[in-house]
Length: 230
Ligand SMILES: [Zn+2]
Ligand SMILES: [Zn+2]
Image 1 (spheres, rainbow, N blue to C red):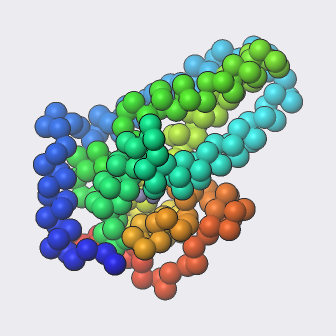
Image 2: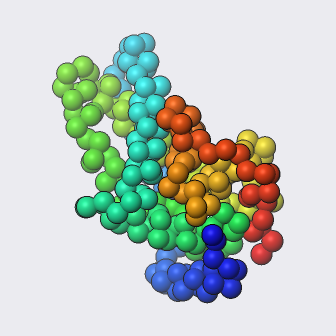
C-alpha cells in the first residue's frame, strides 16, 4: 500500500533537505549527457578500419546491457547485497520512496538527485565490465573492445533518458509522446510498492522482462495519469 499524501509530502521534504546545497540537477543531467556522448565519440574515433562482422557485435552488446540492467535492478537494487548495499539504499529506499506510482513526476531539477544515477556510477560500471573488453581486445581485436565501450556508454545514455522521461511531467512535450507514455506506464507499474520486487525490471526496452516472464500485467489505464498536478 502506498503511503498517504501527507506522509509522502513530509518524507519528500525530509529527503530534499538532505540533497547537498551545492547540488545542481541541470549540471548532473549535463554531466551524464556530455560524458556518455563524448565517450561514444572517442571510442568511435579510436576504431581502425572496422570490419562488417565487428559491427555485428553491437546488437549483441546491447542485448547483454539489457540483461545486465534487468539483473542489477531485480537483484542488488531491490535486495541488500554485500558490497553493493548503496544500490539498494539509493534505489529502493530513496528513489522508490520518493516516487510512488501515483506521484511519479519530478517538480524541481534538484529532485534529479533522486532520479539519475550518481556521477560515479558510470566509471564504476565501466570498471566492473572491464574484463570483457580486455578479453575481446586480446583475443579478437581492439576494435571490438572500443565497440563494447561505445555500446555500454550508448546504453547508459539511453537508460538515463528513458528513466528521465518516465519521471517527467506527463504534460511536458516529451511526456506527451505516445511511445514515452507506454514506457512510462511500464515503469510506473514497477513503482507500485507491492509490485516493485515482482517485475518490469527493464527500465528501457523490456526485452528480458519479456524473455524471463517478469512483465507485469497492464494496469487499468489510470496509473501514471496522476501526480502531475502540482
Ligand atoms: Zn523510476
Ligand atoms: Zn526498482
